[in-house]
Amino acid sequence: MTHFYVSREELYEAVWTTPILRLAPELGLSDRGLAKLCARMEIPVPGLGYWRKVELGQIVKKSRLPKPSEKCYLYTRFWEPGFVEEQKKKKLEDAPLVLEVKELVNQPENRIIVPEDITTYHPLIKSTLKSLRASWASKYGICRPFDEEALDVYCAKASFPRMARLFHVLITSLEKRGHTIYVNQKLTKPLFYKRSNEGTRIDYYGEVIRISLVEKVDRVDHKRTSREEKYNSGPKYDFIPNGKFSLIVENASTCDTKRRWSDKKNKPLETQLNDIFIDLAKIAVHLRLKREKKEADEREDERKRQEAELRRQKQLEEEKRIQQLENFFTQWLKAKQIREFLSLAEKSSIKPETLDMSQEEWLVWARNYADQLDPFLRSSSHSL
Image 1 (cartoon, rainbow, N blue to C red):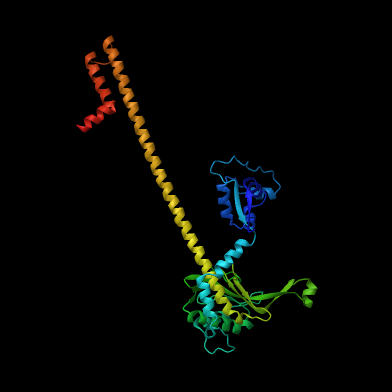
Image 2 (cartoon, rainbow, N blue to C red; image 1 turned 120 degrees about the horizontal axis):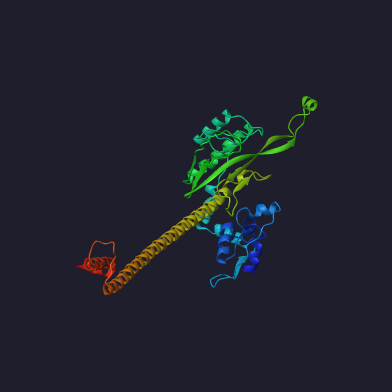
């Protein structure tokens, strides 16, 4: 069985006992997706600050579950844990682009090999090495380039040659297959391990993949010098670069495939480049699907906005018609009442004593005024 059902009442209890950000992944949904599901099932959700108050031990009331309307969902279906992830991975594995890259990579003439010696480096490698040599090492023993035309790398000075060989082969292999790698760091502060918003990017089958190469660091207990022993000072730990690299994709955090490749005991990064190209294809498919979904959501949001605007305009027009009708009715009723009053006034021979006119003149004036109020007489006079 790959799915299970949850009632409206059960989901209501779950939402009010577990924060949505933690509950949603357990149900195979995003937090936004779970919020939309609760809206369809007419389930109230905790507002901002609710869980913080709970953490502080404050007494907070939860909203009551209202009676469902006729359109309300009483049950919903969730997939078993791991099923959705497996389906997503399978979808990426079977994507035409991924199959195409696999076939290309597996051809013997396309296998990537990193040589021990490289005589001429790619221009990006040259600019990166120049910037690295001019930089200074952090307390972790790691250097990073600050030049805008340098790659996004973090490594110790002893690892510069290996970094250059690895990135040189990666760049040239990408360019050989028609892809582009470009940099634009736009750094504002020389902070180590603070990646820029731009960094090193690959235009891989029409999708932008941002990568960085990072050398790992070992933490060891600091051995105090005699002076540090004397004054009870010095750091608690020392950090030593271990020469192990990780190639990281920075802009695919929700991708259901590998996005970090590291040196292993019997499998250094140099031997993983062929597999990395396949994984990059999966990431490209993921980014494309994500982008297309975002564009579809934006189009749907725009359609809903236009529909809402159209409804608002129709509502305004309807209110204007109603107001006009009520004004016509009020004017007609007032004109009718004035005429009835004037008929009685004519029989009783009365008129306001303060007016300097005869009764007949006053009646003529008053009836003219009633005619001016009457919308039917106004419309007939306009038609003439």
